[in-house]
Image (cartoon, rainbow, N blue to C red):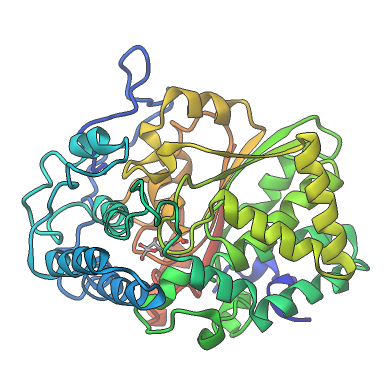
Length: 438
Ligand SMILES: O=P(O)(O)OC[C@@]1(O)O[C@H](CO)[C@@H](O)[C@@H]1O
């Protein structure tokens, strides 16, 4: 069977505060912090200031490559060309500049507050999470995504997302769903969970610095290599299913990450939650605007649903059920500006806290969500996941392939094995985790 839908076995585990200001304050002035035990945030915040570090590579290689690729993918006019060139100069040789005051978007004040203390400094000296988030905001500004003109709302990453969705790999992954129909229920559930998990490896941003912007040229499978089959470094999936007993009238929140090859298996998992009555309702949270290259927006959800409904066999049936679930409100797509804020979840606003508090479990997909969940810091990898997420307003599950330096919740022995392997296990996307806090 192709791809993500292979049943990876779980015993294979061998193998800002960057915030200048909290612009999403709780009504009583609290920072949105929960009542749980907050571990000592003594671990250093990750910045791009260490030559040779992953963060440095993203800032010096991935971001410039992305600007060039976006520029090449659209017939932008001279003004946009100049803005993109200026951004390229700024991120390589300059200092962080504020948003252009003549811009039309409503978030200028927020970014002024979030950027206090960061503007005027080297992009390498500010917190990595902040720098990346702000880079995407600036890229959108340069392409006039937020302008009132003809380029308003034109997703600069759309060509890459579209190419991925049209790829043969996606065809194969969709066909592979048919083979799941006859599986025992438990194995099928595991296969779907792992498909969603490993789908996170198919991240277009992840491919940019490799000079492989489109899926047709990437060959990145979530399916290939023994490490994908044995690369779970932590696996609390039994606890996740325990939190979702069949027949419970639960709402499940799923905070999506990437579109296309990640979102399709996410939607298939959502269908499974609804069909097998693990959830009565699912709220799928997406980004309010294009972000981190392939992050899912509402438009991407619609594209994936269309892709599924047009397929034959099992995938087509799943697409129809999800379409119907949207119409009846059992599947609801939502978004919130906080999803594009350069802030950890610890600073989430009250309305989002309430939303997550009412869910039986909140499933956070992907690497960036993980960094925001535990804090983008150089934690000891054995720091308890439950301690770092105690503030979260309800049960929370992280499904993530490892694509940045942050990792917590590992057993000492697992960590030792990984360190001895000599692999770039923290950043290469060859390893993954399912971590759950009840
Ligand atoms: O959240 P995702 O899509 O799983 O991963 C996004 C991500 O890999 O992109 C960045 C590099 O561009 C990483 O720092 C980051 O964590």
